[in-house]
Length: 123
Image 1 (tube, rainbow, N blue to C red):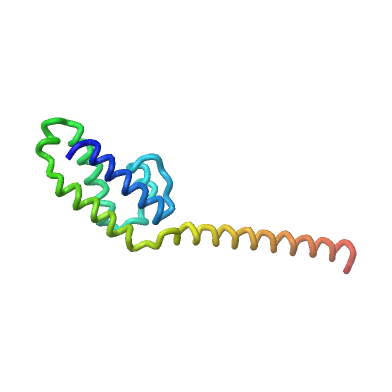
Image 2: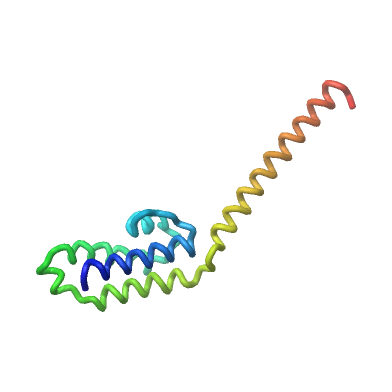
């Protein structure tokens, strides 16, 4: 397993996190940190193993002794966990919560305005 192959796997997983969970980050490590509890425990454990394997690949002797099948298996575990999420569902939910929050605040402002008009003019 070369460093380029590992970077390709990390980039693929980072793009899946952005697509499925609406998590934007520049690196795979930051994306996993932001994902936190959105990922199942097995996927989080696989992500930690991927991060430790990245450290091993930097060292030439350890890289020769690192099994690429473990890396691919951990990447597949994360892909399986992310495949359960619909693309864009979390972003849509976040948008709907934002619009609901704006609607509640707007209704509150209108209600306070009407209360002020009623108290000032008795209408």
